Structure formats: structure tokens, C-alpha cells
Image (cartoon, rainbow, N blue to C red; front, side, top):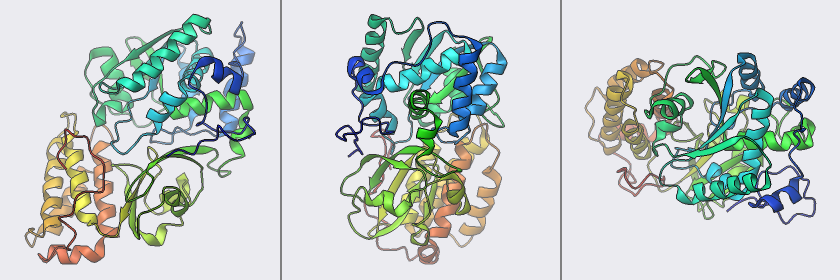
Length: 426
């Protein structure tokens, strides 16, 4: 399913989906790329101002202001390449796959605009091994651009390993430079990442598609959607106990319940997993929360990478969380103790809790483990697992008492409602 606007009479409507995948149709729909033949400081300043005025925040998970990342790249003075992060390592996410398949030129336009603003001479598109169909769409788009001579930039596709952690920005840069997908600690995303002696500016596919439309239609077209403090639209992948799973485009600030309804829940909704497999469970009393940074933060959640998993009533939230904890442990890059050992132990505790086979000290040990893991990893991966488990202990508190006492709910042996890679047992 997708919220396709291609059939609407007003083709100028702000929409990421519904654009033709071929170059001719793309240009006919959105117009030429607004980069002058001679790029000067005045054009660059105007473009930077448009991104700032739009209020665009990254759609890759951290919601970091795109204007700040762009300003840091320009201040560095040695930006060598723009990296398109199409890794989408979350098993429940399809938004960037859909975007790179259906509107690859929109994503490449965004990358080319940032290259022009920063003086970069190369664009690298990262698509993981195994997603050959997506890579083929992007390769065809690059060939069309080269044939039409729309850019003098070098645009390459690289194929990192298809692992959860490989899409983290610093891990992706490490892989491009050395072939090792190892994340490095950064206090925030304004800290520059380097490949060799030159810096790299990294954005996920959806963020770049927004950049391409903002440059054409102006920041106010973007701000006409969403909330004043969190403007624009977002792509969201909906899955779980729904009749029509898929990718939808929604205004920021749309209530969680309304987003889930777009995919037609297959029965009563027990909870929603918001933000991805390192996100948070949200219970029914928070289903009216707007899908935006500040409202979600007030309930201990975040939009994350644009995922909502609907958990139907005939399911055990603690058992599903145990599966997620085991998956998180399997995706460690293997370089930090809190991740390598802490997540494995956390998964084991959750599995015992879910099955009703835990000892009397399980909750004391579990909370102690959560405290010892939080904030001690080189990246945010272990923090995501900790936040997920904490949210489960809160949202599924009514079941928790039965599980701790050795009387698990009758649904703990049901098949999972979540999506996992076939190589991962869950």
C-alpha cells in the first residue's frame, strides 16, 4: 500500500510518492533541477537559507536539523562526497526502498543539490547486498542522468553488508573507507565524518528527496504540511496486525491512531511499536499522540526511522519484546562490551520472563542490567534496546505480574506479528 498522489489533478502538490521513476517523466512532473550553470556564493547562500527556513529535520532516525548538518559541511571546506544512505537496516522499514525504486531521481537530485552547495565532487549511493532490484532502479537512473549530461559529478553505487548496524552513519563511512562496518562515538551529528582527509555529508534517501522538493517549491510549500515546530511530511511503514501493510506519506502531527487506520487494523489494537526495532511500545491511552518529535518525546517515544508496527490483541507484548531483544543482540558490531554481552544477557532475561520460567530475582537483575547498558556503547544501538525493553515493562505491566509469577499469558507461544530477516531466528 502507498499513499500515491500521482493520480491527483494538482501535480504540484507536495508529495514524495507518485513520481515517475524515469528521468523524462521526473523532469516533466517536478521541473528541471534548480542549479545554475555557474554556481556562485549567492546561489549557495540562497539554497542554504531555503533548507534552514523549511525546518527540515533528518528522516533517518535522529531527526537532526538538516540545516545544521549542511552548515557544518560547508564550514569544513573539504567536503569530498555526499553519501546517500539507502541501507534501511530496520527489518520493518520499506520507505527508502519504495522511494529509491519509485523516485530515484528525486533522491539523486537532493544529493546533487547538496554537492553543489558544499563543493563536493562525488556522490556515493549505499544499497546493501541482497537488494538487487533497488540497486537496479538506481543504476538505471544514474545511467539516464549520465546520458542526458545532467551532472558532471561522479555517482557510484556501493553495496555494504545487509546488517542493522551497517547503516549507522559512522559505520557506513568506516565501511566505505576500510570495508569494516564499525560505528564510532559522536556526541551529535554536527561532528564531521571523514573519508581519508575529506569530510562526508550523509543523509538518508527520504531526507534527500525532501531537499529536492524544497529547492524547487520553496520552504513554505514544505511548511504548509505538518506542525509549526515540526513541519513537513514523513514516510511511514506500517506493518503488524493490519490488513494492508505498506508505506504511507503523512503530515507530521497526524495522530498515531489515524496513521494506523490507513492500513486497516485487523482487529483490536493492543499497542503500537513506534520508531522501529530500537523504538518504544505505545499503549492505547497514547494513541492520540501526534506523530511529531515533541509530542512523542513526552510519552517516551520518537518517530525514529518511520515505522509503526500494530500489535493485535491476540499477542504477547513481552514475548514480542523478547524476540526484538534477541534480534538486537544478534546485530551487534562486536566492539563494545555493553553491546556484545549486555544485549545478549538482556535478551536471555526477557526470554525467561516471556516464557514464565524466570527466577524470583528477575526484575531486580533486569533493571540493574538496563542501567549498566544505557549510554555506554560506541553508538546508540544498545540504548535503543534498553529503551524498547523499558517501554515494554511499562505498557505490558498488567501481563508482567503473571509472567513473573510463572503464569505467562496464553498468547506467549503465538507466532510473531513482527518482521525479521529470514537469517535471524525469532
